[in-house]
Amino acid sequence: MTYLSWILCWFEAVSGLRINLAKSEIIPVGEVEEILEMAVALGCKVGQLPSTHLGLPLGASNKATFVWDGVEERVRWKLALWKRQYISKGGRITLIKSTLASMPLYQLSLFCMPKIVARRLEKLQRDFLWGGGSMERKAHLVNWERVCAGKKKGGLGLRKLVPLNKALLGKWVWRFARAKDEMWKQVLMAKYGQEEFGWRTKKANGAFGRKF
Image (tube, rainbow, N blue to C red; front, side, top):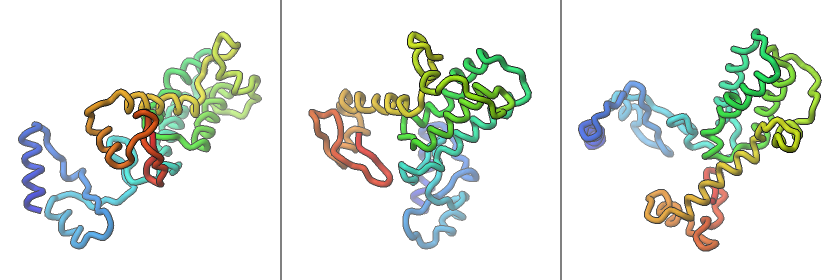
């Protein structure tokens, strides 16, 4: 623990940042003896997996739906703010594009969204579009597939989440192929290897990770 305390002190000295140990957690992997004593010595709390770091889930299965609960809660909270406001249909479309559709983008660019989560979030968008801020049950006058079609095809240009998710994750395939000496690529290659002329890693569909 003395060495760990020194490392944290050196980090603060080199980076100029200050670690708030009162808000920090020490997370054991497996069975760790005297974990409580270690936390007391450092002045932090004992955490457990799964957890979150910088808004991203740690230690959760890549198929877990609960890691998206925060996104859905933020969407519902935003809808609650609009509940008693009169918003025209054009205004609702603008709000869906500018606000509701952008809320999950960060996680969509890093994780594969389960289809059941995509259906729940798109249902919130549909109900808001046709029901307004009150989220009342009203008839959906146009099929959602048509609504999400491009404007040249008679749609409103809204984006479906599953294809958007695939497009955002596809950027990592390009980055993997283009990267040369980046550390993250070296780690993946050392663990999984690569194939298809360096465009992707070998198959690695585990509970906590997926291939490119």
